[in-house]
Image 1 (cartoon, one colour):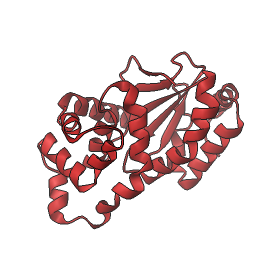
Image 2 (cartoon, rainbow, N blue to C red; image 1 turned 135 degrees about the horizontal axis):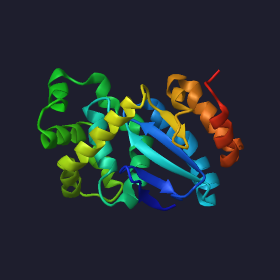
Image 3 (spheres, rainbow, N blue to C red; image 1 turned 90 degrees about the horizontal axis):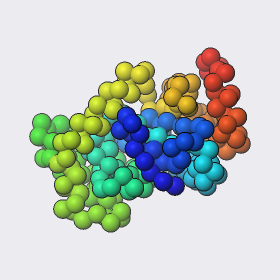
Length: 219
């Protein structure tokens, strides 16, 4: 599927003129986001995106410095690589996130450093993100150029601020057609991913949109 940039600067996978646009709000340290990626990726890519009736728009939500580093790596290179980078980071999350559980105070201090490039390099090294990006064909020099890109960091941070201002409090959260009728999905715990994946698996996108637009709230 094609990758394009929206007028607001977000990346879009699929037909820009699709009748239904699914917006996903994601943070890379969110385990629910990784599970949703694994559970839904095949259904969305094989059943819906090729039809041209559905497009997926990604909005980053930054909860900690590790999220920002990973989001910058997802954005590394041309926009056509973004969704595969995104997929690689989330699908491998269970492995690279392990150091977070037993990090020393010295490591945590390095991850919170004030200098962007130094902080990002420390995070990428401690979490094995250089290796993840190597599977996508990036050498260390290319990765470090992306980790030093202040403009990308500012864009991602601004997009995260906008998501929170729009009412996104947890990830993953979702909206359809620009209306956050599924925003509360992120607050439903593990059942939200199953509910959303199930609905997407059995519903035509145009009918899903009509149903969601008629909802006032989850019950």
